[in-house]
Image (cartoon, rainbow, N blue to C red; front, side, top):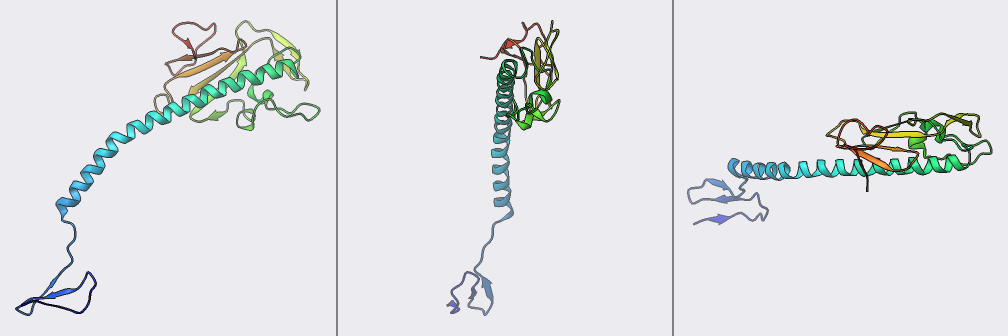
Amino acid sequence: MTERSPRSDKSAKVLCSKGMTQSSDRGFTMVELLIVVAILTLIAAFAVPGLMRARVAANEASAIGTMRVTAGAQKAYLATCGNGGYATDFLTLGQVGPSGEAAFISDDLGTSSSPTKSGYSFMMAAGAGSSAGPDDCNGTPTATHYYATGVPTSFGSTGTRSFAVNSLSMIWQALDAAAPSEPFGPPATPVQ
């Protein structure tokens, strides 16, 4: 005959007929734990590549957005402060005008000559066939064309495409670690 102790918690001991106690707690066996670990490993093996692809896609979308922002900032600069010329670096677009108006590009891009953002590194220079333009409203030299690029900081990990834009405002892409060069054309393709 088995008697239960008056305690009702899970760690109660069961009194056996021979006077020995036996624990009523039962944990997981090693085999059960190994099965759970194997299942979690399989789930992770399928999930991680998908997460990496999503991260690369987000970085590339951000780089395309940065190229669009750059083209828009250059148009505004050309029409107002540039006196008909384009800026040849991001620092120029990040400057405040002489009467205190806002910069043409945000601080995340306009405070460095080669800003890095969302896994991409950006550069800007005078475009192909460019000549010196007039000085801008701050006395900074301009150019008649510009060329800006965005390349992955770690090709394959942070992005699989490189981008470029020039004074025609068409963004081009290449499936390469190097940005499309001017004049744009194959193997580079326009971003739709």
